[in-house]
Image (cartoon, rainbow, N blue to C red; front, side, top):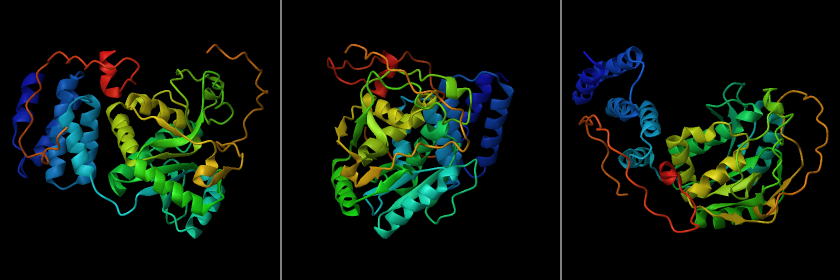
Length: 363
């Protein structure tokens, strides 16, 4: 049988307990035996496997297949609605503090955790999966490396975990482990204020003179310690020491990272990644002058990669450059093999309005 015949037969097969195993096995065989699978079919195969795991009530695998389908069909709005519906839940809390740390910096993370615990605040300590877990009841290991250069992936994975497991109504205050809690009362009031707004807030940094070697001496990958940052500056972003993502902004980020995983490729700085992504989603940065707005102060400790870097000479001063409706959960009906159709034209944008990721293919 040809690829089209095999794919069509599989996608037309009813989903039931009788066919569950055979659908998964045939999907694996198709992926193994055919070097090229058009994305218009790939997402449908993944969606078929999602239906199987959803029928089995295996939520973890179902969501994994649905995420994969979204990455191959990022403009298929029905998939976005399915994802939002299947993971959607309401939590009793409005905000969660995520302390982004690593095994090598565990002492700093535990010190900050003790202050947050005494203040009665909801928090978690986040580290990567390729080092021993932090020994703490609120520790979370995510599917990313613990190295400095993997911080964008670590943060993206942690934000996705909150959205999928804690609640889609929850905002996140992302905090680095070198921050010190100075005023718990101020932190509580700022969290209430930020959660009510639902947007993106922090201390603005960046600009055209952004140091493109800021990561040098921090990466485990020595080649990256001599590679300059290559992405453009779009606007100022919130400094990574502490910034807030309301439920609305968090959902936009999570959906963007799932639909467009290439956003994470070649990105060294998670705070800039967050700010740049929200440019495309129309989220303005609510600017605060200092981290004390959130009750924190920066103790000035540089992030560590777990090794002693080679000395880096002081930087030389350089001139500043010139200035949808939610539909019911999926039934067991198989999706048809999508026909190849030309992409629809993106709606016109007002002059000067921010470019959204959903408009990316129209550029």
